Length: 299
Ligand code: ASP
Image (cartoon, rainbow, N blue to C red; front, side, top):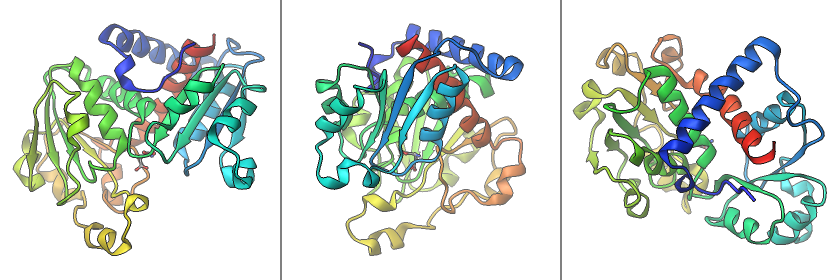
């Protein structure tokens, strides 16, 4: 049983093995399109929350490795709408699939699924908890773009309270010698329970101007509208930070800008053509890292 529930399962050696495998997957896709190592294997995507990249890259990863996917990308068209429990949905899909990729609004849902599953569960985001496979592809992107992770200054910007991708990323970065800065609108600062899992102090700033010149990796996140009880609270914050060409003017020439996406205004489109915009590579790396993870779990 090889569930992927949290980044805490990955030590430095496991990360290095994963990166090597992801680099091989990249080469495989770029030379031959894929392989047959997962021929006749079936995964199930079960998404209780919206997804574009995670669901489609996991699906593409299965196809590229010769396998296939059952996609329940909107559980409202499944028995969930009839009141079926998460546990029963998992026990049903494991009859058909060799692993289940689960996104769910509740923290700990992937663990709940793993507690009853007889096939591996991959956490594709559990509410405001973690998003381990995103953090793994983020780390692979930093490593690929910068050639190293050690020694970098990483600045996290945005809704760090609700953004599960940064929760997982910070936990993973404990394996590296990095400096982490945070910039977030009031009340959306990085949660202590995730910060505790890092060996690095997180230095909080009120303004990006304080740290932008020293930053090697600018990791931008969206304000997570769906997590706000009062829409007016979201409206107050949305638009309070936007990365533009003016921001780039202050950045190192070899810095990179990342975003787990979707963006809803926090990176201006004009930034896309700058060579420092790494979010398109980041998405593509999601395919390679997820191929590597599926190969580990299923091959
Ligand atoms: N796609 C990422 C997630 O599912 C980031 C986001 O939605 O803002 O967490």
